[in-house]
Amino acid sequence: MPSDNTPRSARLDTLFGTPVFAVLFAILCNCFWGSAFPFIKMGYRLFAIDAADTASILCFAGMRFMLGSLLVLLAGAALEGHLPSLPRGKVLAECCALGLWQTTIQYAFYYAAVALLTGAFGGILNSTQSFLGVILAHFLYRTDRMTPAKAAGCVVGFAGVLVATIGNHGGGSGWGVLYMMIATVIFTISGPWNKAVTRKADSFSVCVLNLGVGGLALLVLGLLLGGSLAPQSPLGIPVLLYLALVSGAGYVLWALLMKNNPVSRISVFGLVNLVVNVLLSALLNGEPLWEWQYLAALVLVCTGIWLVNRRGKEART
Image 1: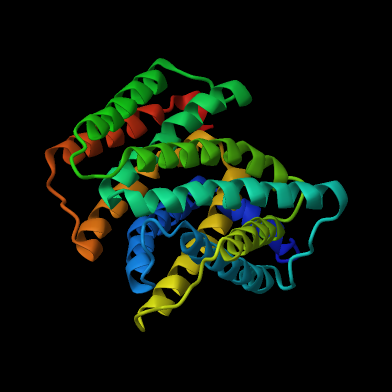
Image 2 (image 1 turned 30 degrees about the horizontal axis):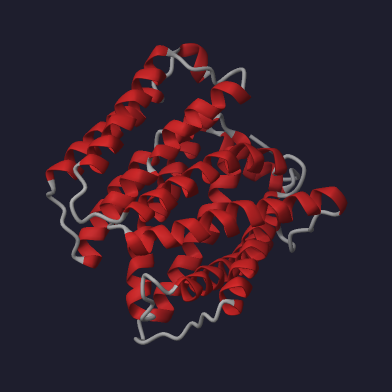
């Protein structure tokens, strides 16, 4: 264990690199992210944002991430004892580019998809990130190679997505499916990039820039397109603040997990994201829970996620 004189950032790295805590934080992170989809749909209702009002959707997303950036800044100051020091030069430019890619572009597609899909169907589609991440890791990391179990898991998982897509009756439009798949691919590509950037700069400063720059770009773009943001219910502001907490806490947790763990150690907990998404979508938004294609897809996808994360002794060391 680190001594009392160890910098707080090093203590955080040690904490998040410890397997038991990595598991707990990965579960918490995925609970946050699993609640995002149904709460975003609720936010659209509370702010009276129509599915076709792309400009206001971008404003809603941008405000959420800018508030999330502020929360990360405050969390960094509390946990590290000082405000995160922003990187300079090429590293600063890379952090800003990551924000435009991972936050602006990814969530422009994601938020458009949320407006066009049910929570259960959207969550099942979004779960493909777990399998795409395994495939990408095979080509990027020598210690994260594809195995027969991982290959079987990917096949089973994608079969679950296929079941949901083919059996989709009222779950969403074709455009919503396309937007969600694009967002998922962008998220998958962002993981290794985020991991690399957090090795060059403080994790909190990377998150602040990621959310802040990306969120500002979304907000400005939405305003230029004629969007607006006005809550039509007193619950609108608390929902927006909760989503800001989800983005801030989720990004901090994920960045620290990605920095200090193999991708395969934490990706298994994507099934928590999916289950929370489906349950909250039914509870908060009145979406059907017992559709056979969703239940079958849920079982297949969760089985696939479990399979791709079965590790031998050499992978657990």
